[in-house]
Length: 354
Image (tube, rainbow, N blue to C red; front, side, top):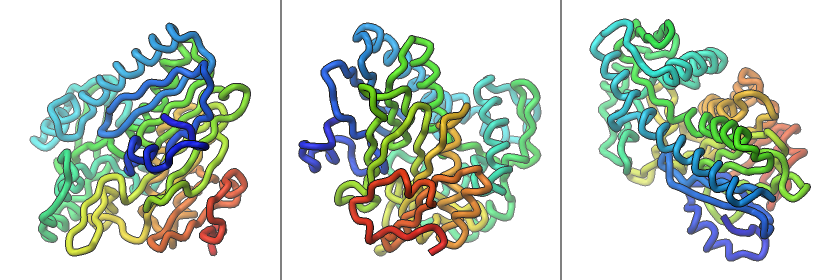
């Protein structure tokens, strides 16, 4: 992680790669401890402010080991506990034993899916795979429209699952769980818990642009930059306060282009197709239990509803601070978040509903 001010922007963006929609721009102090790793298919960075170096290294080590375990067990297409569960669901088995963690994730994502009216839907892993996003490097050919229609007609939903203890049963064999739209936010919450358990009060955790702040940075809020979805510098900056979390979904995270058309990993479960018309959605969640997970999950239905319905989707998810960048690069932002942001080009900004 580098300084935002006084640094070479091109070098900074090359280091963090353009997949990051939001990145931490920390005004460094000599007391900061920084560490990074590559987990969940993205760069993870942790900055601990004004802490004992030995304590900081121990805490960060625990977080990264936890992340490595989660990456293995929750991977959507490589061998692990989640793949085992999905294979059993597809075969029609009942009372499938899984881990306590996966059982808890199912229950929590069911609640969020219901709140989103089904637009946040971790049960559509078959569609995600069909669009080739269950590969390290996605790409064509485009899927068969009839196969897309078949899966959409099967209507896999989180409500198709029942969980009793650590036993899972599905009434729909088309359900295939993919927690990719939730895992980074969930990881933020887990990291915050591990850091606090180790006596760390002031830290910033950045999981591929999903960010959570603990405490402050040398007596001031953590200074955050939100990257432009199409590059070219920072879209806006803000100060992130203790316990707040930022989640961003973008059409540039995982995507490919065929005949000049972009296909991203954010799929509308109602149509089975990648969502057009939106470059990115960013939400800010106030300090609360599960703030990281909510920030990640809530950005998906807001993105899927697009320009016509994003505000209602945000309200359904309990989000008052949200921003959508449309396909033309115009920024639509709620008044609550607008008051927190300093935009590099205010002429691109429209108030919500305009």
